[in-house]
Image (cartoon, rainbow, N blue to C red; front, side, top):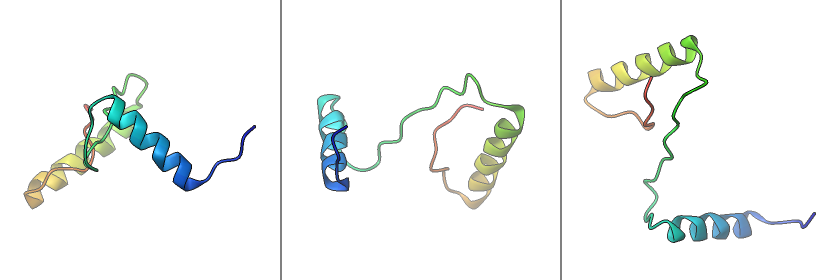
Length: 64
């Protein structure tokens, strides 16, 4: 196993994003949620509702 550093890992992530045409730091991978539990779905819905009440959007993009 080859040891790595945070700097090398960050470079690998940036290469991965660049290969896919993703720019900036606003990229959030979408989680399909196929194996999500009902309690997790309820939590995500609650977070989304409270963000909407504040007039903001949640930091995640998930379908619950």
